[in-house]
Length: 324
Image (cartoon, rainbow, N blue to C red; front, side, top):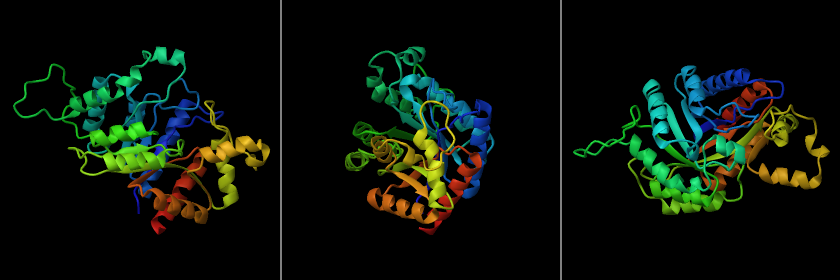
């Protein structure tokens, strides 16, 4: 079985609040751990009423404290929003508290509105410094070469920390950077389905072995709404189909029949890599996806309104994966 992991978008539900959302994330992580999921990653978004994990490393610490074995990670840290030194220090601290359980996924991020960018102290064009900032972060976290003079600035904690660093992305450019640095690559196929094939070809063909990784390693994402029947799966999935930057809405019966055909076509394309429905439907979709792209790992996101149904969806997916 391919290792299965979870990307928690920490969705704030309509009528919910931050505290309940984060408590539910911990509940979901504990259930995932019991089911044998490999990783539990949380996202970074700012000024977004539907997301509770803007302070990503703090949320990671909370979830790590409430679990024992599952790896906890950032999916990811949007490095242009941060100083590489501070990221190294934060993840060095997490690694000291939770040894061999922390992952660091790095992303360039999606351009936000101007007011949010200013509040983050971003400046126009700073995303072009992303490759240099990644290299700087990797230096802070590396073991100093024997006999080398002490660096003027050191990440303490952070220096020499064996935290696996992943490159996140949804483009060929991200694949090229991951390959050149010899990092594992997590492609966001759950929201960027069009370039996944090209990105993986570039990553695998251009990969340069590194101290962290000897050969290419790919994790692909899928949206999941697994249930006992196809009808129930489609009902649960309607929350994701309705989702915007506002709090996550409750599901709607027969949602697809209520919307314009052009919008429906766009939604189906956007969610092309989704597992929605019964065990048999999910098994068929998962088998086809693995055969098409042969990922080394799979990470799933689940925009399901009800926490019990979200946990049940992960249980069904775990059961299906073990039969493949």
